[in-house]
Amino acid sequence: MAINRKDFLKTMGGLAALTIIPRRVLGGPGHIAPNDQLTKGIIGMGGIGFSANHFSSNEQCRLVAVCDCDDNHLEKGVRLSKERLNEEVKGYHLYRDLINDPNVDVVHIATPPHWHGIMAVEAAKAGKDIWCEKPMTRTIGEGKKVMEAVRQNGRIFRLNTWFRFKDTFYGLGTTVEPLKKLVDSGVLGWPLKVTISGYTGFNWKFFWVGKENLVEQPIPKNLDYDLWLGPAPYKPYNEHRTHQTFRGYWDYDGGGLGDMGQHYIDPVQYILGKDGTSPIKVEVDAPQQHHDAIGTWRKIVYTYDDGCQIILQGEQHGDPTAPYIEGPNGKVYQGFRCELNGQPAHNIMDILSELPDPEPQNTDFIKCIHNREKFALNEINGFRSATIVNMGLCALRLNRTLEFDPVKLQFINDEAANALIDQPMRAPWKI
Image 1 (tube, rainbow, N blue to C red):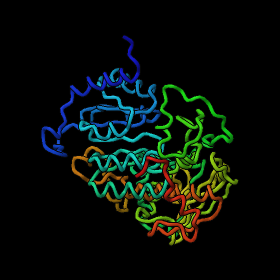
Image 2 (image 1 turned 30 degrees about the horizontal axis):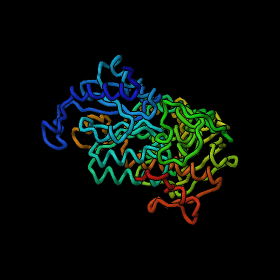
Image 3 (image 1 turned 90 degrees about the horizontal axis):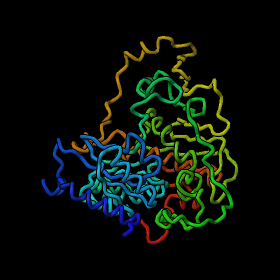
Image 4 (image 1 turned 90 degrees about the vertical axis):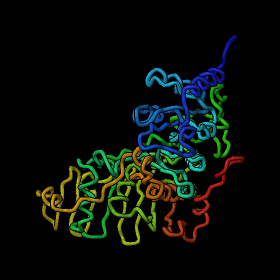
């Protein structure tokens, strides 16, 4: 008798279930001993779901489940788990089945952003710790609900962008720590202006734009398109809406800014010491945007209440000779060249060696889960940097300057902008 895809995946999942004994059975509800091996499930087996840092299984955390509403992606996840990781994982079509699997400790959300909020909240309510891809959420309102759910359910949350604690930062030839020390010392003066451009290593991926007037196409048999859309408004299927090119449409993401923005804005938020607040104004210079397809932009400027600014240079890339960080008393350029009081600071590393180090950050996610400690980039500071991205997208979509209240988390005197904070979801989906 022939076996179809879903029967195949059910069979594979059944085999996996026989090999795993939930630690909750062995040690009581929610029990995770310090030396226990954690288990994880990945929702979304597209490109990022198979990246080396995510599609893995080791002594600390074992992959036990994968989920996707595209049967081809799901079959690939089940197959490669066996071939590459030697793991017999369970394959799920519906994300809720993975979240509610008692064998899963950590839910890794690698779906398009329009699903991040719903899945993170449901995972938190199910008692699961969460690893979420950037951007944290597609809207400010969804981010608020994720924060609330993580707090109320005592979960550990990690947002997957890492420049605030590792890797060379932009085109500056240094990690964030020396920049943080320099800013914290006050030698650059205050307020500061940070300019993010193509010349400081940021590729805004302008080819990630949508197409206008898409022609309806037949839905592939392997794709559950209705489930892929989920809370997004129903639009006739076209392949450009899904998988690798979904980022070009307002319903699912925010173009290159939505995808890459948090990578590069989050460490600036950290450097400036703004993890507990948000800008009070965002200005955009951009063409009028299409109602469905996201286009390009020229410049976005954020201003904080103390005068600090973050300037994003878009398709014009900016000035390659301009400083990355600029204050009244000093500047920082590409290659970590510094000026203090108008003179080159050739001895900048000697100066930094005498300055106090920033507070240590918890960068071991597995250890944070065992110790129930917040990860370095968590639901709170991650929400703030995601809010900067989403503020910019709201201003871009409306093509006007917006003022924002960082305490009330609302735009000031702008009903249309506030309507974008909590956008309606297609029934029956909701947070």
